[in-house]
Structure formats: structure tokens, C-alpha cells
Amino acid sequence: MTPFYDRDAEIIYVSMTEGRAKTANLRRDPRAALEITGPDRYTWATAEGTVTLIGPGTEPDGPEVEALVDYYRRAAGEHPDWDEYRRVMVADRRVLMVMAVDRVYGERLR
Image (cartoon, rainbow, N blue to C red; front, side):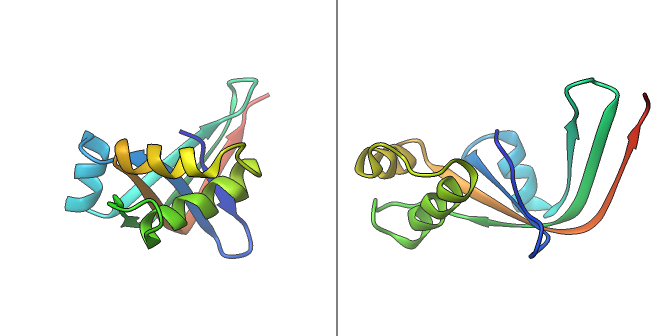
């Protein structure tokens, strides 16, 4: 899981897979918390908010897959083969989690 945080919009994006427990739990209750731990393992931040799930897409050129393409571009840049990426997103039943951040807190212990 590679989260992408849009600071201006205060939104976190994460690509997930349909059929997993976390996806089912978010469909049932869209409240979420995402924790990021720093490389020193003492620094951490938690973001809390409400989630919207986009997808899974059924067509490589559909809007659900286009949202995943936008996420990838923002998080990692250009993909070497967008056609393959789109096919894999449909085959893997990928879902884009969009979390509107309501609260952020953390700690630096060292």
C-alpha cells in the first residue's frame, strides 16, 4: 500500500483490492484511520477521516480505472505501459480509497 497525500485538498489516496477485509469494512463503515511510521520507528503520524471507494472498474478505459491512473501518476509518475496497468487494475479488481482527512496527529519520540 502506497498512500498519496494531497496536502492542498487534505485527501489521502490508496489503491486497494476488492474482496479484502479492509475494503469490506470500509464499505460497511467509511470511517478510517491511517498510520504512517517514520524510518526511525519512533516518529509517527495518524490521519483520520471519511472514505469514499471508487471501483472496481470493469473496463480498462472506464472512469474507475482512470481514477487509479491519476492516483499512480500523482504518487509515482508515468507508468512504462499504461495499457498493461489498466488491464491489471481490472483483472485485480483494484479500488481507489479516497479519504477526506478530518484530523492529523503524531509524535516524534527521539
